[in-house]
Length: 126
Image 1 (tube, rainbow, N blue to C red):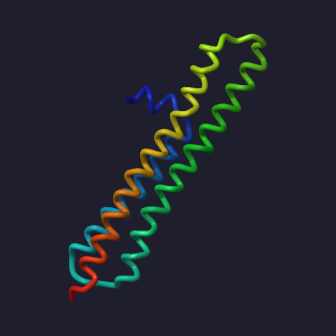
Image 2 (image 1 turned 120 degrees about the vertical axis):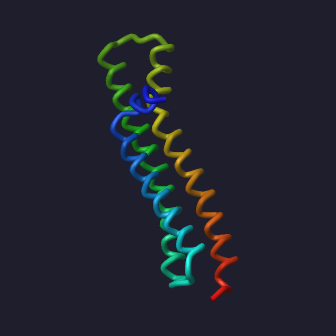
Image 3 (image 1 turned 180 degrees about the vertical axis):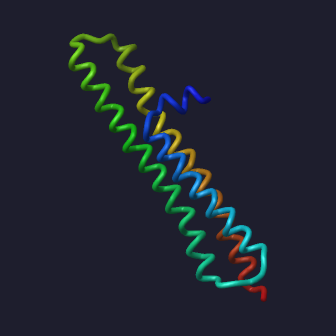
């Protein structure tokens, strides 16, 4: 798993950072929903930020993939003739950041949906 993460390059760290921000916001919003009633607008804003950071992670993953494909294309151009297996191996590595970004987005979407449902359920109390 660590090798898989490391092969994604620099953008994997950015995607991980965006994912951690999203997770932290989701945890804080959940804590605020279950705690004492407070400013509903602030909680709603924090819940929406969970979705933003998940989408941002997916976008960073896509940018990382495009950069990886660019590096791979330059390497193939310099090498001249490359076997299809080597080319597809490079594409597979380049796609790692998009896969990770989409995984972060999926978790963020589930958290956002759960928090929005909780907000509707708990909005009437207090």
